[in-house]
Length: 249
Image 1 (cartoon, rainbow, N blue to C red):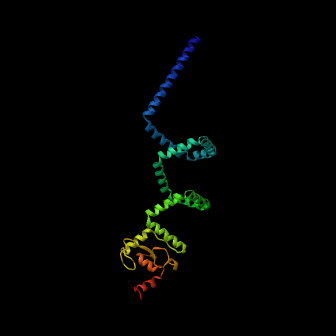
Image 2 (cartoon, rainbow, N blue to C red):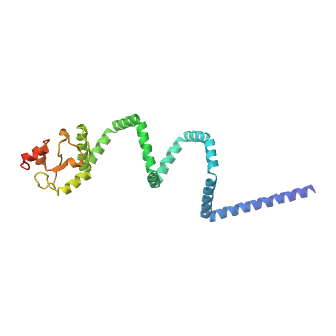
């Protein structure tokens, strides 16, 4: 009798195992066939769950934050080479997507991001200055070559930098841009402000009132001259210069 009961029990268990295996196989096939639909459903469900339980989930994260951070640090330390290689590979494979995300995030949070940068720079002036000095010292030839190339490719901007530097040394107020100089060229119709000859082949930007005489560096104190006129004018007072040319009494 007991053998019969044992046999029936084994048959029953075998039948249950078969049902479980069949059910598991069915679920695998169903999940595979409906992967996208299930993913969409789970995304919606998870989003709704997070929204409905936002405060509780935030509290749980705070409770376990220190422990989670400790475990993460320990794992990273134990798998340092793997982490470095994985990050490098991930960045290479997703560079454009990451850059696009950064651009979108910056545009959406522009004011906050600028405020953070300004605050960090104010709080770490000495640290940042030391970093810049060390980086320049370690890569001096590279930076010099980059500077030479940029000035060669952008001569108008480079000239503007030199004028701005001279103005700073003279403690002159105001500033101007390459666009201001281009607009001035158009206003003068491509002619020297003194002799009215064409300056389309080249010109020099002159401060009407010289910086050494207290003139400003803004666009309203600029004129475009040919090289001979600028050499003749030098730092003369504009009225005296025009009188010497017979343009004023």
